[in-house]
Length: 269
Image (cartoon, rainbow, N blue to C red; front, side, top):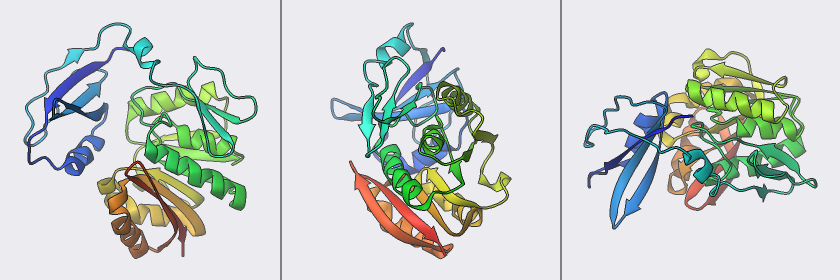
């Protein structure tokens, strides 16, 4: 897969959450923040050069990543156990025979399991599946598909996974096949407004501002008495997230933080 990169200096007045919310609304681009010599940069990645307009930032100048970038990435993505049952690993590493293995081939879809927000969701997921045994799960903003895959491998009979990003869905489809769960997970292109019905368990690893846009849809899609697992926001924003979800009918059962990121488990009233 070809990959293009653009590194943009961050203006002093930059509000990172606003920038991230804008990028998360775009198809086909992912990003990271880097700090070099005390200066902060926004690094964009895409499968082809594209126009990205961000207030305060220069126009991206795209460079093609050199051949072999996928191989170099392998040095940074190694298998690891999580929770009491899961083992997350890439295709080039063996699984753990004493655990439930989730194989993720990294792509532009967010969710290799290494980020704190994914790990928080996985911890809550393992707990809820063990205790509640839901028949189906909805994964909003599925990215690489890691949460939906983990859910069905933990014992949930089926899952629906939705994302607005076509490249993320392609990566998720590949990972479904790698894990042999393609018959149990339905992938949907779009946002939560496109869905009907209710689910006993809903997962959403999204950005803070994305939650503000879809909180009512998450409430509509969660069964009464059902559970909602969320992450993707900074730990300091946890109280704001709790208030927002409370306003649409949820009650927070548990909140956790990891490396400055927050995650919460809610029940629908």
